[in-house]
Image 1: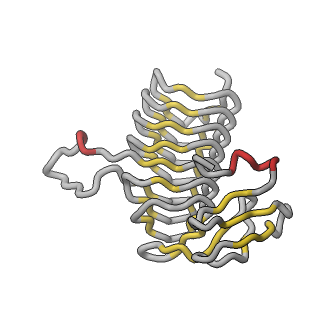
Image 2: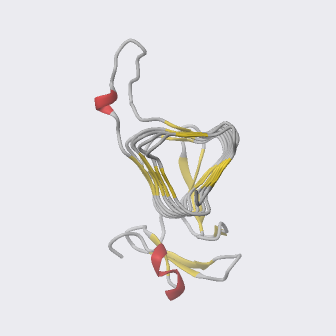
Length: 204
């Protein structure tokens, strides 16, 4: 076994878990799950059958990653944050054929106790504040807060707050790394520096 599993954790036969990953106390990984390298699953994490988790993701305590959720590389899921996969669940009506796909793009942060409703995409390096409720897709690098969540700013790939208007093109540098960011006329943000080429939104 090329990954660590705590004796209290359950990993169903058939689950794929990459080298260097860690599955901690009382967690359960279902048979159909695919988990990349160097992933950390904290205490009491559940991972469903139709779930894909990329390399170097960190999923903190008490998070359930349900069917039809995909996490790209380097996603952070804060303690007790919530995913859903059905819009109108009822205990008396089975709706497994109505699951909606949810995609969390590379490097995004989902803060503690936030909720992400199903069928949406959270963009590259987006930052969702603690307790926020995400009801619609989120732009790359967007800083989201509130119930329901709204965009209140922009964040760099390193997690620094950028001083840019939400609705006005401009440029700024990350206060942590100094990398240059540009907000285009169509209000899409990407990193200008060649070293951060992978942070550009699709099509840029």
